[in-house]
Image (cartoon, rainbow, N blue to C red):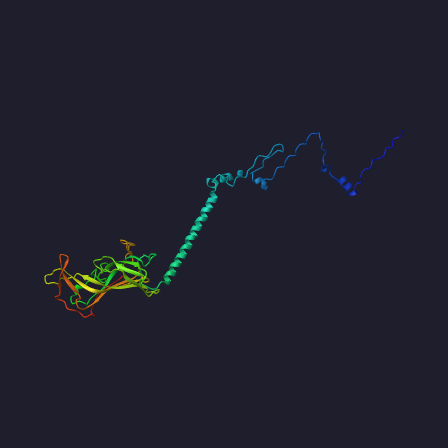
Length: 354
């Protein structure tokens, strides 16, 4: 019995591979791991240089961990700052930790800025409109009144405050018989010269030739009239105005006695012409103090006004009577002579350009 031994065949390797294999260092070869053998010890971890960036966080050597135990839990809030403070202190700040604190702060800031911008824009627009309105307004005397016309202007009840400007007594032979309330002119005393007319303007009935009518209220110092036509003159111009004229019987108590026994007397200037101009674009400048917005239901007239009472001389100008116990008595004829019709008695009132 014979045995045939032959060399087993192996794969051929390149010469380069064999040369590398022959020159390899024994330390570079992989060690054989036995499945059931003991585990080789873990090589020691070399000490890190202190100047390496990672070690700066720990102010020294980093903690050593074993593969047998899990590393400790780490949170960004556990990091400390340069002065030892922790981010958790910032997170737990009562102003920042409050729910919606930052959001509420930014919303309030945005609202405040929006309000400030709105106020600035409103102020700029208001000043621009005020400047434009002043530029378009016709030149006129300044006014101290803040009263503005109502929605139904000129309909309404108005207190027309004026001052007595001038007085003329040429129509009568006895100047004491013609007087003008309040009996003091502006040149003598601006405050004592004030006179107020309470007038009521209403819309005229349909079919009337004018759109408005004007009436006076009972006033012992001013002539009375009812439903006098009020006409618009110079419409849409700087001198636009409502005007009226009517005849009234002006009663006057003479400033001195006109009878031989010094009894009381009353003189009438019949058919005295009363005229008024109520401007709508010319400002007033009297009175100098602020007027009340409403006096007994009468609003101040917001613009310039002129009021005149005039009469010429002639027969029975004036017509005077004695007054006994408040009643008219005998007519007084002695001491009077008729004056030419061209001789005028007048009372002139206005509320601008003193």
